Length: 173
Image (tube, rainbow, N blue to C red; front, side):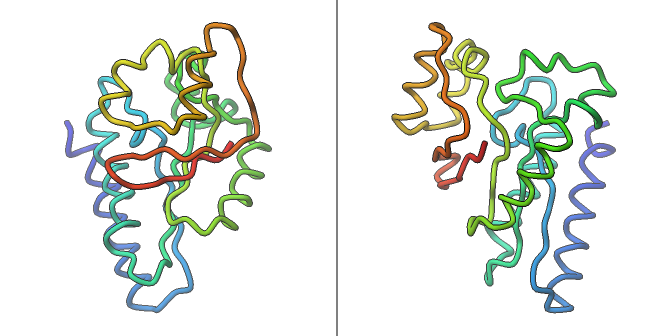
C-alpha cells in the first residue's frame, strides 16, 4: 500500500518540523534518499515520501535551519543491503559506513539546505541518460563525465551542481 510507505515519512517529517519550529531549534537534519533526485522505477511511494522531505527544506525553511541530506545507499547496512539491491547497477556508488560518517560531517558544514551525498557511477548513469534528461539538467562538467563513461574515465572527489526541478543542488562526493 502506497500510504503505508509514505505516511511515516510525511507525518514524521511534519511533526519534526513543527517541533523544531515551536522550540526555536538551531537546526534540524532530515535524512532523505538520492532516489528523490535520481528516481528508480517501481518506487513511487518511497520517492514521493523522500520528495516531501526535500520540499520541507525548500518551503518550510525561512531561517535556513532545515537541512536535508539525500543519501546514496549503504554497502554495509540498511534497506538496500537487506533487500538485495544490485549496488553496481545504481546511478550512484553506495557508501561504506566510514565514508558515510565523513560525508555527514562535510554535509553539515555545507551552507546548502539540500545536499546529495554520493558519487555518480557514470556508466550506469549514461545507460539511463535518456530517462534522467527528462528530470534533470546536468552542468557541462557533469555531462562531459557521463559522456566519457563508456571510455571508463571518471573523476572522483569533485563537487558538481545539477539543477533539479528548477533548484540548484550541490552534489557532494
